Length: 631
Image (cartoon, rainbow, N blue to C red; front, side, top):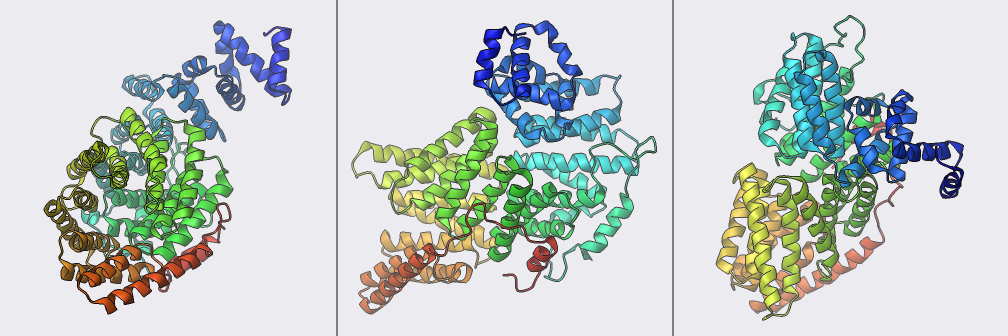
């Protein structure tokens, strides 16, 4: 063991208690005496986790990496109750130290699956735990490999009720991974398999009709009837030996809402918002007071995001605040599950025009994720990108975009280091950076080379994002339409007015076909086209009509305090001044002044402070959500 002087130095460094001092001395001893490391594995799981976390604190990352690379040891830690947060920190620290731990563990697992000496039941349970952890840690490609092998093992078994339940558990975890990693062809197969296991028709992938407030329906059957039928097919399983299973398969009462939540999440990332909303409501209906908090938080988050894009903001607000409060109460202020709920809260706040609060929420989420995952994780990159966009919106009128640019560039660097070239995850981050560069260029004096370079870089980023989106989603998709609209704005800044008009018209046509004529996204593109006609193409009559339509949509969705109304009102002042209709110009000047007064009032009516969100009773929350007067 360490000598007395070393023990004294350690005691001064970590004066907490005798147990901590023993851990420190043990770690230092193991660093010197590698031959005794096998003795570690005889320790109880909780103490073993404490030793490994002490290795992290003492920066003994080489020995920690070699320990975590042993799959049997790693499985013990994954199963250890209360160890997940510390294990995530250890895992990510070893990776940032240079280890390829995710792929190493996945390869060892796949090799073990090929070996005949292991029972399939054990391998499936091991794969579920390993794949689930890799997914939680953000290493989606390796999680996908593990979980796909789990499904293959399940399908190679006799198709008993127990095995179908096991396959559904694998499929729901795999679908979560594939949605997060934008693996859409694989996700489509996993979704189809899930429907088959559930006994639902394959054409359910088409957006089901939106259910009435009084009851959620899908394929002509209400959700209660549908769930009863599923439970009959997938009744509570017993293990092959006849005893109750000890596998990580959840009871059907808890599994079904998670499955439906994954359906909602898949359709959300594929921009099929009607289906995302419908499946989210299915999942919400199935929550009960005894549903584990983790599942409840996941369902509330998914349903809230779907409500945001459907512009049902009252429902979205109640759901996401409850999710944040429940995550904070259950997991604590430093857990990634709280951070992910905060990211969705920031998304809601941004969409309801509470920009300052949105930035604060995103900053808390990023800080939390950095504490767990360091500075090189897809989770951190997502938070950087979200914060960059919120800062871009916040500073749109001030022109101080350099903090936003820094976050966007950090996000792109992280993603480029972690995914293959031309991966779809790069599209959104490149779009955000392109928007920021365009605004910086507009604030750069004309004639400077920097201005032209910034606009050219912005165009390259927008074009790259459009290519990635078209490849993944096709032409007729909301994301693709957004990229066309962004190019339209950029070409307006570059004084390529005919190209700008073409892009805006494409964006409007796609959005109207997919979302209808009164959607927020349509109003946004109409406002941009109005600006082009008004300020650059002298088509003031056409601009006037478009501004009126944009204002109508904004007032209907957000009310008279909405920030975007400023640009439409200013546009109409310019239109009527150009047309020498000064009485109308003065009218919209007064309306603009009134808008400023309302915005000042809004500053005193802030959202609840971060951390003050409340957890209402679930029955009350559901009753409020499904009330016909909720929005």
